[in-house]
Amino acid sequence: MPASNSQTEASPPDGGFQAWGTVFGCFLMQFCGFGYISSFGVYQDYYTRVYMTNYPPSAISWIGALTSFLTVNVTLISGPLYDRGWFYRLMIVGSLLQSLSLFALSFTKPGQFYLAFMVQGVISGFGMGLTYAPSIAVVSQHFSSRKRTLVMSLVTSGTPLGSMIHPIMLNNLLNGTVGFAKGVRASAGFVSALLLIACLSVRTRELSAPTVGYNVVARKCSREVLFILMTVGSTLFQIGFYFPLFYLQLDSTKHGLDINFSFYSLVIMNAACFIGRCMTGMVAPYAGVLNSTIASTVACSAIIISMIALSDMASVVVLGLAYGYFSGVFIALIVPLVAVLTPDLSELGARMGICFAFTSFGGLLGGPISGALVGSQYKWWIASLFSGLVSLVGSLIFVVMRLIIYHRGINGSPSMAGGDT
Picture 1 (tube, rainbow, N blue to C red):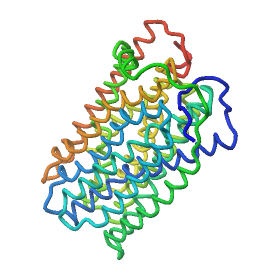
Picture 2 (picture 1 turned 90 degrees about the vertical axis):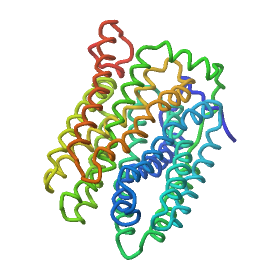
Picture 3 (picture 1 turned 180 degrees about the vertical axis):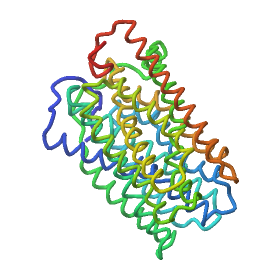
Picture 4 (picture 1 turned 120 degrees about the vertical axis):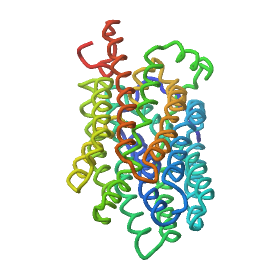
């Protein structure tokens, strides 16, 4: 029985079986969604070295880039549909597409780049995009603003946990005795089971239908300077954001490090990412969502540039832990940042769709650009420097937002800018 998903502040339960069941289901959606995308570094490494050796890394990275792009960009569709009460349909259709795409990927033969591109990049990305934004936004129906940032952080922590489990599973399956076809099928079966549990766990509340049309929300956003700056800053930052996610494992392998250790480089990074996301929900309400965003993006930019120094196991561990933690903080804050800039939460789905429709281009361009800069000669320092600098420009735009808030003397939600506004 689909319920309307417009969020009002009318007596959210702030707990209970349905509320926490929904949190668990949405956690699993993130585990199987962006948690799987974040493990694309395993596919990038395997395709480059073994399965599609006739294609350069920049071409292969388009698969992961397109998956990420569609996952975020399809929120332009799923966001408004979520606001109109299509939550359950989005969960079911999106889960089916994701499951079927992974099973179809297992039938890809060596060198069949375009089939993998369509199945893994297009179909899987579209399916994940239908579930991504709704599975985060729906928790705002069950929790008040006092707990919302914490709960959203718990939900999004499913991504780094998935980014730990999926790489371990995929590396052992693809590079072991199982092989690509059976390995991908095993992974598809695992993901499908979790998506089924997620669909059975999530619930919406009976709330009033939205009265504001999508076009009206878009016009509002186009006149809000802070919303525009947030969107531009996030887009620029994400052009460089995906470089470590896609290339850390391949980078460590090409530097002559033990291949078994390289397989776990993404696990190290995503373990730290899990900690960062969980801690964000406790720290951000006191430090401020925007302040925490600034700190995490500046730190990420510096770490990406520091990847120039990657040369041994110690450097991989340090860079992986540092980047994982601060990238986890940033990802955990994206939706709360949109939420605190949304005066009417019945518009949250539409605003997420508008914001993510633009920021998704950062993910689409980042991987291929980095791959082209690395080139066949594997010039890692060029890609590291470019990715770090463009991410730093994005983080400076968040600083501009903070200055605007300070000069306006905005005394709104402490979750936006901290207690010093």
